Image (cartoon, rainbow, N blue to C red; front, side, top):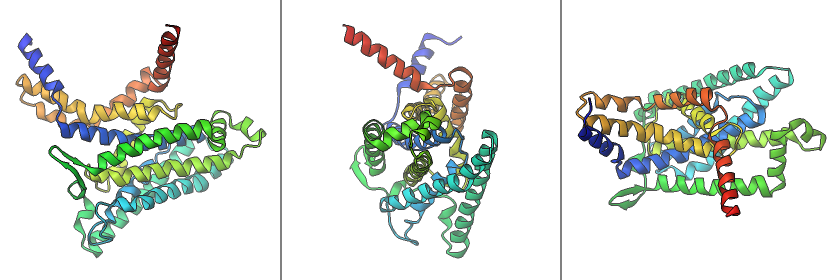
Length: 339
């Protein structure tokens, strides 16, 4: 039976978080928020779970690789952000115009549309593999099969080391949340988008161009994915399989946050980033502190936690965190206002 000393050691292992871990967590939360917002926006407009979203993110990752010294020689690749934004947006818009809209007009079901997005993802993955093989075999750039640009980033502070990528992503996230609130609540296009999402039939009767709004939404959603993909290799390793693997994590963000809320992905990203980047280390610290020999194995399975979250939220909280948090905030406001 574990002793009181074991419990104290376990607690010490849990609360010991290194500074670089915290920075990595905040960075990961930021890029997951961008990705999750895009996926949620697509789902809200067409009710289609878009399995091609990993492809848009992958485009951003490989736009970052174009900054390689043997290609464009732009390191860090931040000047290429507009290209990643546009490529992700155009690819997403093409998916809507060439696949989703034609099939929807023919009466395709949600399942059929979902399968169609899987086909788009396979097509996109093939393009990425072809490009990586081209640079690998023709230009002999062998790192295209696996790269990490963390050491190429701008060092903002030396001790403790802080690089530019986390600061840029967090600033971008703060700006996005502010602009999103203003856009949805204060602009005609944003209000029309809300109306088109909540009641597309009534919106069309009122003369709101729902198709154009859907086109804009899909472009913006894909563009956010491409932009997030550009920043990803500034902290995490990338190979041609990463876009497919990260798709599960993006779905976990949207589902945990709540697919019905445009602000849900920010809550979902907070939870998923913690579960994948901090929680395994805390479990390891706990097990290692009490002398468990196989403690290091837990660090290999961080990718499992998003899958567990998907199952738990679908089973026990299908509406996600956003409705519950919104309800709690309103209740707290009424208590404070009443007091």
